[in-house]
Image (cartoon, rainbow, N blue to C red; front, side):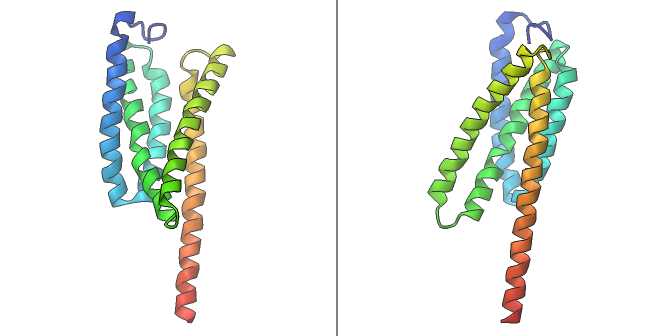
Length: 167
């Protein structure tokens, strides 16, 4: 924010606050979206995260747009958490507590991995906005995993219907 957008260091607490407010907004939105369609919200939010991170790399060059997109990054990332939690609970009815703990563990691993990859691309000389590009790429991979998961769920559901119809 100081190097790319040119913000004064004294404004960084406000930037962090914007990110936090975005996370609160995203969490509320994510819960509402998950109530409507768990997998649909996962697909939509993963796509949104990808777009937000890509645009952030362009928006980071001016203070006002950088701050706006810090809010959007916080909001989009947090919007994903409630539908992921709901998905895990849906696919693990026999062990909901274990599924919930795995979600939080996965988020912590992702935070550490994201920091490591972000530091690596900055160290490699790709610039201070390059972690957002890495994040966008990881979001695309996550979307791919979600699509495979949704497809497998669809196939399993269809086979169960056929088995009931034959019985």
